[in-house]
Amino acid sequence: AQSVTQLGSHVSVSEGALVLLRCNYSSSVPPYLFWYVQYPNQGLQLLLKYTTGATLVKGINGFEAEFKKSETSFHLTKPSAHMSDAAEYFCAVRGKTSGSRLTFGEGTQLTVNP
Amino acid sequence: DVKVTQSSRYLVKRTGEKVFLECVQDMDHENMFWYRQDPGLGLRLIYFSYDVKMKEKGDIPEGYSVSREKKERFSLILESASTNQTSMYLCASSLSRVTYEQYFGPGTRLTVT
Image 1 (tube, chains in turn yellow, orange):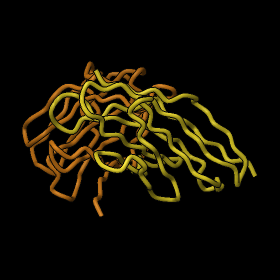
Image 2 (cartoon, helix red, strand yellow):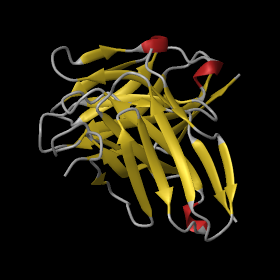
Image 3 (cartoon, one colour):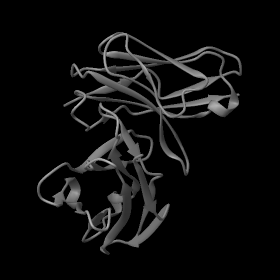
Image 4 (cartoon, chains in turn blue, red):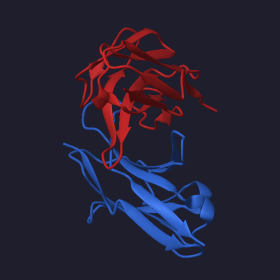
């Protein structure tokens, strides 16, 4: 079965500091991996995705993630945090069954301190 | 831009009431999904649908049913609402069975008293 583990339900950084949100997955099929962001009182918005090809994926708002097969990881990074990055972040992996099911992690709440 | 809309942002219902949550997408997507979101549990899939009049159970279907009479509309039904169904409900859609990117609505925060 597919599963996603996000290490750290809460991460706090200072404005301008590196953001690192961790995601590890397990998958019995070649993984398609996603990061979504949820701002307060809103739905989820796609940040970036990995399907095939280049393992370093760039997304919106300066975020990027690297697919590391040997480590079964897909960590999300941003070199310099901005106050507007404060949100909840979800990692997701495609499901095994046919169709477009996704399995989501538990989420990581990012706080950015001034 | 894909737009997924949900009928209500906030809803308060009483225990035992029948509750309908509506979701509409405007991009002719084949697949539609209903999730509930609870703190510390992430998103859990309730039901999904690959086509009109088709539905499949997700991970937590108990206490819920769905209806998809038209391609653009996917309804979640709580036959007899209970307090443990107080949650944020998110609807999503995706283009087809081989595309995995999902587009989400703004969510409905349901409180059952």
